[in-house]
Amino acid sequence: MNGIHDLGGMQGFGPIVREDDEPVFHAEWERHVFAVAMLALGGAGIQVDEMRHAIERMPAADYLTTTYYEHWLHACETLLLEKGVITAGELDRRVADLAKTEGV
Amino acid sequence: MAALPKDMVRTAVAAGMSARAEVAAPAQFKTGDAVLARNINPPGHTRLPRYIRGKRGVVQCNHGGFVFADTRAHGQGDQPHYVYNVRFEARELWGADASPHDAVYIDLWEPYIERAP
Image (cartoon, each protein chain N blue to C red):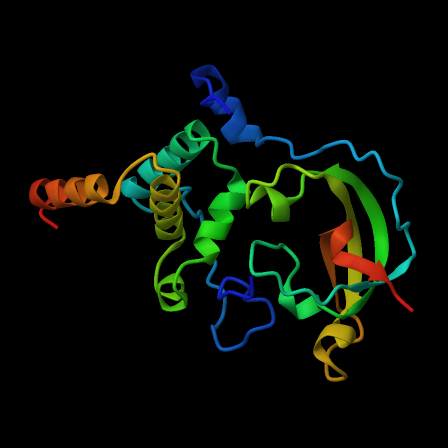
């Protein structure tokens, strides 16, 4: 699809900032998202190409204002909902529970 | 597909999982062939970048057969095709102001390209 992800040739994003000694993960939650994506998508028989397409289907403004592992999390939510592995109600309840305990 | 067994996780994360696959049909292109990236705009997943569609390039090599992302993304199976590395001159992509010394090399599945006239 001709989505916002296909950035080749676009201008105005500024220079690519390279970090010295870039860590594999920049926060603990990113490590969790990586593990969840590998195991949940693998366990549900979801191909990596389906995951990439789920990221491509993000609303353009959301895609540009979120980070790499937020894209992964979005894809996990989208695909696990679409495949019927989890329900929207389950996801909403879990997020509400976490909001209480994590104070976010 | 079964869940990834625990004892394979370390290997899978470290080495990745191969996407190579046999293609029964003969290759349609060979090194040195002039090709055009097809001007396709599928609503689903594709790994054909927009900025090369309709552009002319030259096949550098045939990497062999690989499962096809465009079908796997939509539950339509592996449908493996040959993947070619194709060189596109910067001036072909970006116009006369681009450097004559620059080029972009892109790996493309066979359905992404056609023979250049």
